[in-house]
Image 1 (cartoon, rainbow, N blue to C red):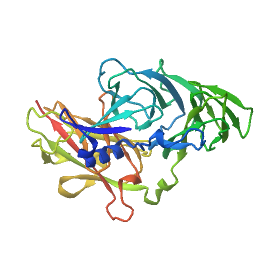
Image 2 (cartoon, one colour):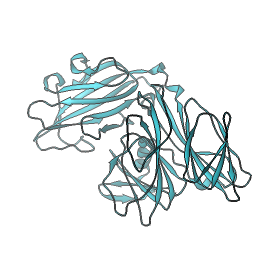
Image 3 (cartoon, one colour):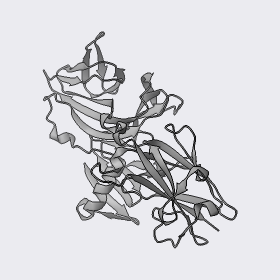
Image 4 (cartoon, rainbow, N blue to C red):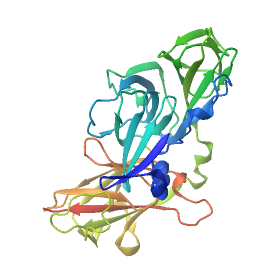
Length: 378
């Protein structure tokens, strides 16, 4: 797997932008592992991609598709939660970030974790390539072709979860195992044919390109003389997110920007000035499944340096929307914490962000999430 960074339209070798790449890799939540490190026939499944996410408060189901890279670069698109798995050729993944873009080449058997609403291009650098998408979507979503639903829906607990993609390569006589858990695991054969023997229930086979879900631990063996390979997407609950430190303060600053300033990845040098949120005329609404009622400026408290603060906000996913004051034509929301991701919703109606323990050092004493809202004027 090869990684590069891009800033202002220029591409740089990974070694020259080490700090940038490390930051962006953490930002997209991917654990990047080379498939070449696994020898055919050893049977030991390896985690090739991994990330954390808050799952919707409704049943979810896996959707998969084998897709080909387009001949030309398509416009970047907000992506669903899940994984991209290289199948043939070299798939180029361009992920947009606040500090610049990250470029990753996925060879066959390599994968990357994709957080919800990641803005991403998927194309081929020079030759035709194919890749699998494995998306975990709410049951209310109906994306349609080329995606196909796999298995029955399941209802996750309303907390943080770990999603991991494990790959096993099996030679003659090889054996591997998919662990059991609280939720069904997605199982996809990527080459050859595999025999699946669940702990409970009848065994079955999967040929390359076939997928299903299993609800118990299972043993995987190859069929036929050639090697076989598979991936398993496993969802587990993050035990360490239990609310020992389950609430934080949420702070908001409102900035007024000079006429003509437009939204940009970083608003730090845009010349915007902090104003009184209560006197700005903007109406702010922060909603999330962990809240009984939305957060508004009316139920906020006075904070430092002109901020408004909501105390004891639970960990969880949130959406911030705003009603503009007279004269304003738009707004932008940017994170005030390292590691906090704030994403514009695909329909442009607000911004999403997630508060969890990964944003903080448990040894520290600063437990607050900060947001900056910038009002834009013609």
